[in-house]
Image 1 (cartoon, rainbow, N blue to C red):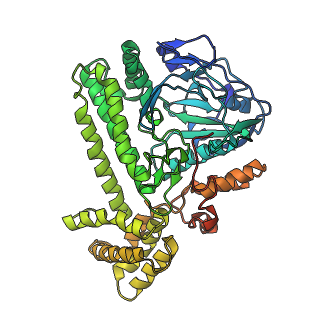
Image 2 (cartoon, one colour; image 1 turned 180 degrees about the vertical axis):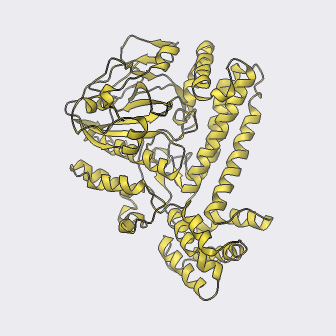
Length: 533
């Protein structure tokens, strides 16, 4: 049984349980003393539905809406029903390592929460629905290219098994938005769009940072207690230093698991500011993200980060720890005066990341466990071999899965299967020096794989379950954007369906699992992006 979203009952725990500003004044300004501001979406001229997540809709008990009508009015911000109390959250954050002060939901506003058929609670947030007090010099809108990317990647990451926020709908506004895509003095009009994002909560590290920075300790405690009661109830009633300590430890653990997933699927977030870090350990704010194609630890898709490469793929585990340290500093007033009180939880992050990453990499290689120091050395040597041979991370592991039975068997077929793997997954020229490094690693790996018990076919099948064939490569997303801007949704719809089953072969869609084409290497939106949206 499903309900149209315009008929759904919304609950408003964030607004009703926390101190907020109710003036509905959306002028950009400082808003001290509050956790949120009540806002109203700014209507758009001609909203119509472009995409809908059927699986998420069913999970939430919401019916797929027609292309136009009251339900799309809700998803576009044109209709606020009686049970909604829309708000924009106030938060601060470190951006590229520098404290930025008040930030907040500048182009996002939450409509409230709905209760799913299973009893779980989900916050629905519109991104691109107009200005709020936190919009600073911006218009609160979003363009189709960034909105489509966020919609697709949120859902793609979910089906990959990565902890993530979700996306329910993508709506075109019928209005044009002016954006300078690369901040290089070339503003252009682009079609506007709005994404409806879904999560248990969108609270970030930065929500707590702004309270601590301005010594709003009552608000800090109120927000922490709200999060613990609603999202960490297993920790017990908040109020004691021990509950706050265990809460932070769990945040560290969840964040570590999330980042380990990123590293093992080759996802690069692109802008890991503290205000883009979920308090639930979910991937949040899909902006200038990308996927490793040639394996390059120093790569970032974000042009804004080209001066320091702070958020490059290889830096992500360290930056997550840095962000947790910033959160620990903000939460320290809750656990006493000892600035080191939360330090042990940071060790939990490091231990959990290392264990999760190792476990996932071990599974991706078809190994049941690491048995010796030689096994550990084999894993540790893999990144250098991948980089030397310029291997496409996704294609490497998928091809390796299929190659496993031949590698187990050894003999004359092994050299041919290695040649095939290098041809299919390497961006380096044939005969490149790095290929020899990879051949040597594969030889050692094949020897280790032969020590596994069980039939080779079972090893292959297990590997195929953890090594995806399909990921949302940037050039694929850009093709969907180009088509959608010409009112052709077929590319978007096809991608959506294929990405729902990333571990299935789907041979009729082999072209979506190909190496990045040469034309996409430098094309805007295919290799690099900016924070512009």
